[in-house]
Image (tube, rainbow, N blue to C red; front, side, top):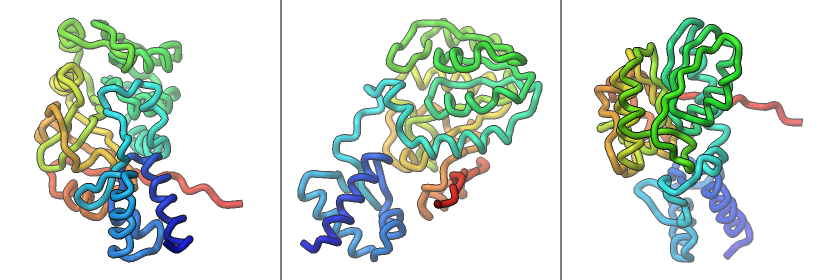
Length: 264
């Protein structure tokens, strides 16, 4: 194998470690290679047991299950994408609004950017968000209690769902584990799905925030049907095909590009 091919394949594995999945178009664009070369690289790496091929790309073989990742582990994944999406979401809120925030790490990133948009009323079952903005002047915070999940740093269950029913929010900001464009948003477990459904029932507008690596892949439990989604915010890493599929749906699509930092 040529050194150039070896180095490129090492870089592909490095990208997979950071983003967990890649589309073939991302690989060809990033390395300036043909589709045939990209497919050959993936075939070699799959044969070596270093990744798993998917329809239109590849994913990391050792990708941890979204069910068993802790909040701290998930918080470190796709940081730039989460920040770009959070900046886009901030543009959709105004002082005086009532917001429901779920317990995903993308929503936690968003919560860190809304400190100065006051007054705001926040309703959340996320301990991480409570700790992040609980002492902020101008923010009225309602904490939804229930059974505590240490891995997610959140509260869930029938008590939490009943508490959400007391509120009426302008917008619910929701993150999902998977988004299948023609069907809707999926959660990794029944408890999370139930909380997302409860939020959607008590908010006038539902905004789903999901990074490109979670679009188009198999979901486990349907949490939000397409008809219950008003806006989808994703990051600039989406492929041409992902964008095409999302734009066919009834909801508004917002693609958040990361801020380009000058070199030097």
